[in-house]
Amino acid sequence: MDETWRGPIRDTAEPAKLLSSELRYRGHVWSVRSDRVELPSGHVVERDVVDHTGAVGVVALDEDDRVLMIRQYRQPVGGYLFEVPAGLRDVDGEHPLRTAQRELLEEAGYTADAWHVLVDFYNSPGGSDEAFRCYLARGLHEVPGGRPMTGEAEEAHLPRVWVPLQEAVDLVLAGELHNPTVVTGVLAAAAARSRQWSTLRPADDPMWRLDVADPAL
Image 1 (cartoon, one colour):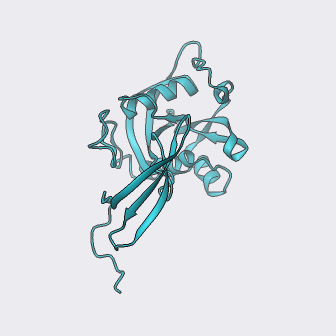
Image 2: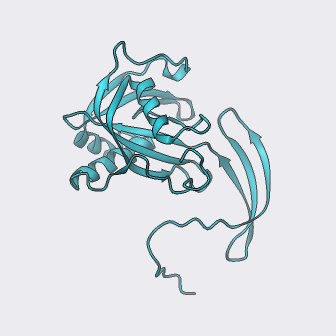
Image 3: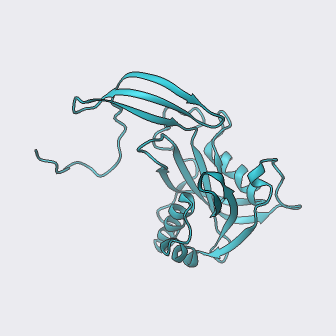
């Protein structure tokens, strides 16, 4: 069988035929369902899917091209990770840009004049439908009085640090930073800067999988 792809190199939405779907677990943030589908090959399979609301992150750069990072505890991995401000898209109808602006304010105490789409990705497409958008924010302003306290336990104390973009790239490649938004966002920001920011997309650019179904877009 010839398995050489000769078409365009881009992801496409081509859902398999859904035969049945059963909710297995409903959690505080996401749920798990079992989908029974018929693949284009004709094979019938059952796959467990984490039904996720989606999330956004922000690579905030100051005038010296330093990345704003925060240090936050993450129970699933049992430790503290250096991250960029990020959060779930858990407000119905809220545009992802608005979510990103809110997270930058709540987790870091900053607003920004200029917003662009930096990179989009699926966090774990083998088992989750979580779509993630990472923005680039520039023209930063620290809000008087610091960030508002949201009451979230993991957000009670968020030490922040400014890391030069090239140093952040080196830390990612050295295996010192592991948060997926930091890894993808830092590398994407460095690549965009090397192209004089010509690859940046408008902040209201539709997200790929949600450009029809998501009323916020």
